[in-house]
Image 1: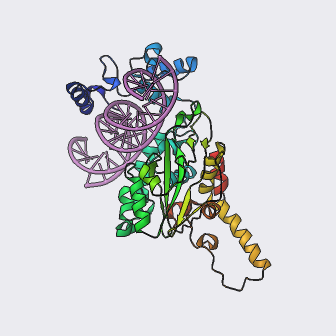
Image 2: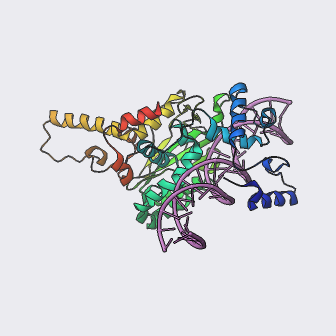
Image 3: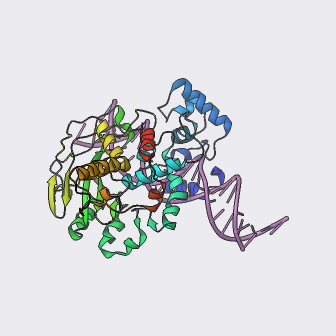
Length: 375
DNA sequence: AAAAACTACAACCGCTTTGAA
DNA sequence: TTTCAAAGCGGTTGTAGTTTT
C-alpha cells in the first residue's frame, strides 16, 4: 500500500536516523525496494520458501533474488503468502471468538491469531481496529476493557481503565486497584512469554497475564505484568517468582495449540482474603494453559453443564419450590461469556456482566464452534 | 461529475526477547 | 557475562478503494 518513493515518514525517519547515527530500518538500505509487493515478487518469495523453507530472513532476499529486506519478506510471507493463511471475510463465529479472546488476552494479537486457524495477527488486529472496536463502542462498550462505557466514568475504576493497556504500569495498577477497590478481584494467570519462539527453546520471557476480575463488571483483560516485577512479588501476589501458566504459544501453524507450559496457578484474592487455588499444575504439559483458556472461552458449555447438575440436585432434594440463592452464572440471569462457570468456580471468580455483542451471538452451538476453532 | 470524507488493510517502524558466539 | 544478529510483536502509517456530499 505504501509508495516507497512518496512516504514522508520513511524518508524522514531514515534521515533522522542518519542524523542521529542510529541504526536505520533495514529497508532504508540503498537499493532495497519498499511498498506494495508485485505478483512477481510474491512468486519469487513463495517459490523460494517452498523450496528452501522459512527462516534466515536476513539473508533470504539475496538468496531468493529479491530486492527487499528480510523483515519485509518475512511479513509478506507470514501475512499473505503462507498457504495456511485464510483470506476473506471474518465469519461471525470467528468474530465472536476474537471478541472473547480479546477480552481475555487484550491486544495480544499473535496469541489471538494463534487460536483462530488461518488468520494472522495483522489481519485480526486490523479487523479489530476497523470493525470490532467500533462495534463495541457503538454498543456502549469500551473496546479496551470490554466494560460498559458508563462504567468508565466510575472513579473507582479509573485506575484500571487508565492502566489497562500499559504493560509498564500494570502491576502497580493492579495492586492499587485491588487494594482501593474491594470489588476488584485480581486473578493472576501468569504465562510465560506468549511468544512463538518457545518451540525449540525453553522458557521465554515470563509474563503474567493478570485478569482483573471485577465482581460487578467483569474484568479487564489487558493487564500484563512482568514476573520480574519485584514489587509485585513483594506485595505477596505470588509466592513463586515463576508462577506461570507458562511459556508459550502456539502459533498458527507451527506447533498447534497454545502450547502453554504451566507451572502453577497463583493466588486468587477475594475480598481481601487470599487463598491459593488448590490446583497444582507445576509440571503440567503444554495442554494445560490451552485447556484453561478453552475453559474460559467455553463458558457456555460449562455453564449449561453446571446448570444441569444444579437443577438435578435441586430436583432430587425437592427444593424446587424454595428460593435458593444461586450465583448469577448458574441462574443464567447474566454471566460473563468469557469466564466459564467451571473456571470461575475453580479460580474463585465470579463475573456477571455480559457483552451484548457476544451475548447476542451466543447460541447452543457455541461450545462446539469454539472447540472446532481451537482444535 | 468532482471533491471530500471515510474505510480497509498492507506494510513499515521501533522495540523487546532470545540464543549463540 | 556481554554483545549482537535474528526473529517476532504491537502500534502506526499511508494509500487504494468506496461512499457521501
